[in-house]
Image 1 (cartoon, rainbow, N blue to C red):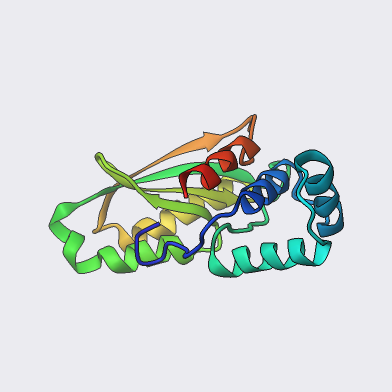
Image 2 (cartoon, rainbow, N blue to C red):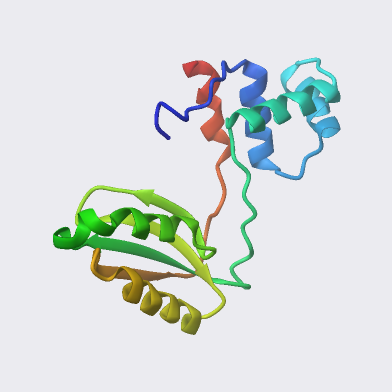
Length: 172
C-alpha cells in the first residue's frame, strides 16, 4: 500500500480488538462481537455500533475481504515474472495489467530481485495453467524473458493471525 491509498483511520482499542476477533472467527456476528467485547475486554458497546464500526473500516479500506475457495476446487501456483529489459518500456503496462486483471490472479505484488512481479494464481487444473502461460507468452513474450511457476500444495495456514491486530492500537 502506498501513501496515496493508505486508509485514513485512527485506531481505538476497540477497533483493533474487533479486527482481532474477526480474524479469529470471520463468521462472528456483530451481536456476538458486542458480547465478546463486554465479557472478554470489559468494553460496553451495542451490536449496532460494532456493525457500524466494521462497515466504516471496510469502506475506508482498513481491511479487505476476499473469497478464497478451498484448495480442493482449484490448484494454486506462485508465478514469478522476469523482465526482458530490451522490450520492457514498450509493453510493461499492458503485461502488468493483463496479470493484475486476469480472473486467475488471486494476489499480485511487486518485489525486488530478478523476478520482480509475482502473483498467486488459481486454475481448475494443470492444463488450464499451462494454456494460460502459453497465451501469456504469445501476447507479452517480448516483455517477459521468463516465467517461473511453482505449484502450491499442502496449504498449512491461510489466514491472518489475530495477534497481528494487537499492535494496531498501540502503534496509532
